[in-house]
Length: 257
Image (cartoon, rainbow, N blue to C red):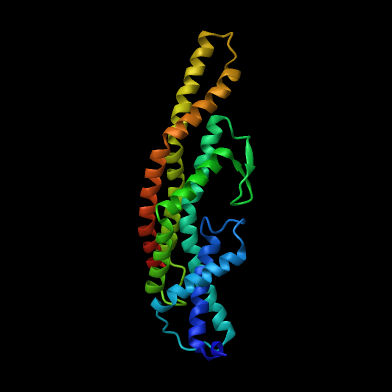
C-alpha cells in the first residue's frame, strides 16, 4: 500500500521523465532496432528515469487536466525524438558509406537482411554498421547520450520545447554533414577502386584480347576488401572524433530547443 502514498507530483514527474527517455531509446541508434524487445526498452527507460529522478528539478504545479498532461507528454516525446535523430545521423552516414563502398566494389546487387533495421542492405554496409555499434559502446558514446539527457532536463524544463529557427538550422546542418561523413568513411575504397578502374581501362586498350569484365570483377572485390581492412584504424579514429563532436552538437541542439 506504500505505492499509493507516493505524491501525485512525483508520479507526474516520473511519467514526464520517462516520456523523454523512452522517446530517445525508441528512436536513437542501437536501441531502436527491431530485434531489441519493446519490453526491454520500456524497462531500460524506467531504470534510466529512476536514476535521473533525484537530479531533475520539477517546478510544475499539479496537473489536473488530462489534456494538459497529454500536451506535456507530447513535448517530452518531441524532445526525445530530436535528440535520438541527432545521433541517428551518424549511423545513417555509416550506412550510406557502406552502400557507396559496396557499389564501387561491385557488391551493390548483393543485399541481405539487416538484423537491426529488418531491411535489405549491402554486406559492406552491414560490416560498417556492426563496427560502428562496437565502437559506440567501446568509446563510451552511450555515456554521451546519457549526459545529453541529463543536460536536456537541466536546460529545458518540462513543456519547454518549441519549434525554433536555430533548432531547424542545426538539424539541417547536421543532416548535411551526413553525406560529408559518408564520403570520408568510404574514401579509401572509392580512391583505390578508381585507380583499379583506370588500370583496367589501360589494360583493355593495350591488350584487347583480355576480358576486362571477368578480370575486373573479382579484382575490385579483393582490392576493396583489402582497403576496408587497412582503413579500419582510420575508421575508428574518425568515429571517435565524430562521437566527441556530437556531444557538443547535442548540447547546442538542446539549448536551441
